[in-house]
Length: 149
Image (cartoon, rainbow, N blue to C red):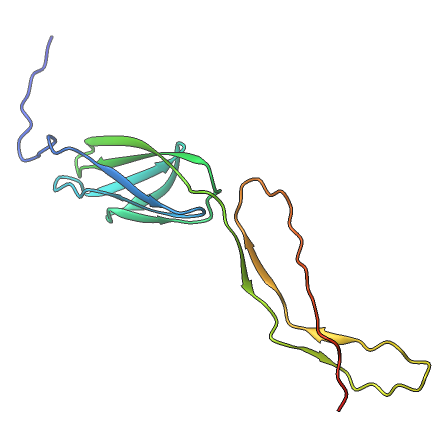
């Protein structure tokens, strides 16, 4: 026995597009809204990362220089679905000095001929390294001669 039917009240002919603006560690994933869809499911590498009514998603904490396969599914209130898939790549990683100390403070020291060491405090140094393959890096700090009051 064959069952034939006509779907009415739905438009499943609209093309589904999937777009992304990727950086080295995150991305803005978006797709075109479908009038027939009551919700969307977004998957990255077959794992669900979003489910809801919006047609965009902010992806965070990705790895630089990596390909990610995304699929978006539009689901109607009756359970019908349409999907599209696309692969996007994150950009080259970045090494950036975000914050450096503006000064170093030393405790007051009285030199009596034997005490030649003074300890100081330095503000934190923040470095962003999102490169996928870090070849290591070295932070060189230089100072000018100390002056007396």
